[in-house]
Length: 231
Image 1 (cartoon, helix red, strand yellow):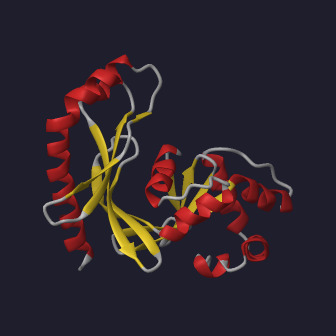
Image 2: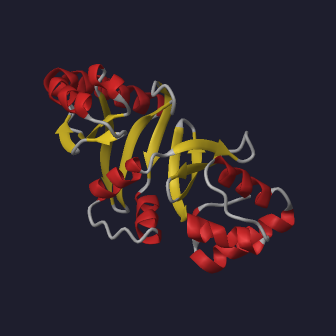
Image 3: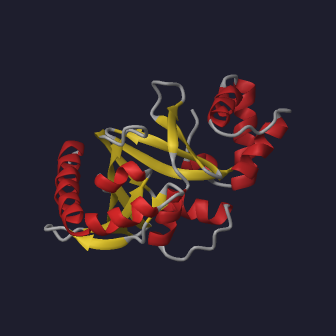
């Protein structure tokens, strides 16, 4: 299946499922959202089947009371593979939450790395996915800007991935504590938020720094350099 066919199939099912969810569950969630004081609010996730018999995990979420009349459902399609469970969805703008033309792919290896490196001890892939969503992934940045490799901030660490066609494949995860070791190796201080991405870029800007980063990654994470190549 081409990227275009995959995108159309995902969007068709998301539109179809989203409409049905709003119709049947929107009013119940509305009452809870109007009473809520702290946001974002995540409701209990559940699975649904599409007409094509695909399994989707639904995560109802409200970012403010304004969402009481505009029910928000995050939908991710489940794909079993020998390596584990992949999760597919279409990309969306972080601020407007409007769909764009990209396909988001969460690889099982990335979720396992997050589980291990944050000592979460979560057993089910579905629960691990929900934990990832709750960590508010944001701030995509490629290096360099035209590169097919990207960094992605979440609370507690950084996701590294690769763009293949329309697919943004989230490949692996580095926790903040390990990243701080890279910074200390260069005499820098770990800074939160957007500064972390800028710090990574600075570390990679010179051949010496890149070699140091790769040396640290190779010694600390073993095969990591082969999982995500910084060329």
